[in-house]
Length: 579
Image 1 (cartoon, helix red, strand yellow):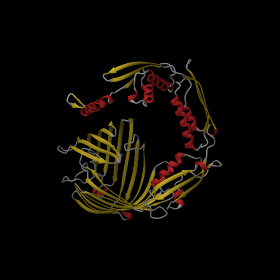
Image 2 (cartoon, one colour):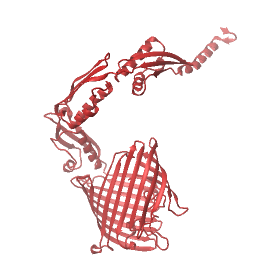
Image 3 (tube, one colour):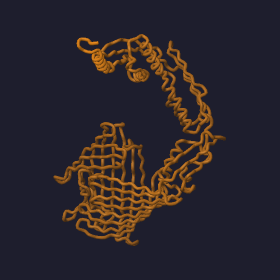
Image 4 (spheres, rainbow, N blue to C red):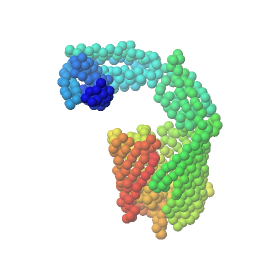
């Protein structure tokens, strides 16, 4: 069969191609539902209910409009609006069909009767009473089903966290009278008894039981708390002794008011090796390697070494740690280190042997007593010398933060002192004092501020009596920005930097989030290093901050307001903690 010179098969093929070409255009029709008369929470809840309607289902039929009207009224009833009128308007926008729902929902049902009761062991519990005060529906409020359900969930969640494992609701009722806009809430919660920890057992550990039990902040017979379990898990993880930690509170086998706790542990690998590359403008590229032997014996002793190599500085340090009763905060540590520095007017080789004892005090401060042997062969400016020192020391430190790569709240404090005296074998006499403090705060989730203070002094008349590594210098990435590394310091007659006996540096910084993990910063630094009289130096600038998964990355463009012409602008790049 032929149609005007074309075969039937050819015509059929052309029609099929034409139909296929038209199909995408039809599928692209953007039919949609528009909401008028509602905003905010009401609009969001309606959109959530209507989200299950596919675009292809939208049409002008009465049946479809009834479905949409029912969903809108359900969504608004959940927010306390029971007197709802929905009118529909049909529109066309080219090939698109628009169903406009005009919604009238101005009157809500309020809570006239609010009957909330807690029975059992939680009846007088402070946290439950606080939850009842802050989160429960209140008389006179709008009847909000979501708030009611959230309160129920929070009650049960708190009960599980505190060990009320028999908790249940004995009455849960919502009564509504839409005509006179009144509602009644009745919620009776019986917490039952609060369970206590039963037998606590460790399994699979290579560390002796006494060391593990020292990490427990609770004992058999103490009330159950999910927070205590979380703290125990964190303490076990901090030791680095284990590759996996599983705490099983056996709720199903609870009896006589107790439930057993079984702690399954898997030993960590005997040797861990890490390698990495870092960069700071002060030292340029840096290669790093770390070797860790997290446990040597059943007492939990550990051994480790760090290697850092850069063009001006090379560092090798080994340490042996002996945990005591509180294994995370109470320990002896012995450190042997070598450092070589060739930077600017400093050439130094130093050997350190350090023995220290650390405690965590009840007030939250860490106290550290140490004895350090230092031998240093150095050239500082035009002075070449060697120094041998035996220095007892003491330090107190404390820090906290709200978590995350760039915490909203943080603080850090350090005060330290080291003493050298010729009567016990040192080359010279002095007392070296050091103090640091830093604070991070926020005005909102998009605004942070930072304040940092760093100061030190050496009680000694002559700078030449102090080895190079103990003198003070400022300038660089983590000090006075806008100045070259270690160039804020006294100089000798030849203009070579010799370092100072006294140092004080302050930093103020404002940060504003631009988008996501990216921030802009404005900062000012102020400080000096001196022997006789301070010569205060100022630095200002702007920077970029990225909250990376491994810590804040900082890129700063800084101007040294008191620097020599030609050296008054510097770019600083750093990776690491801000305090």
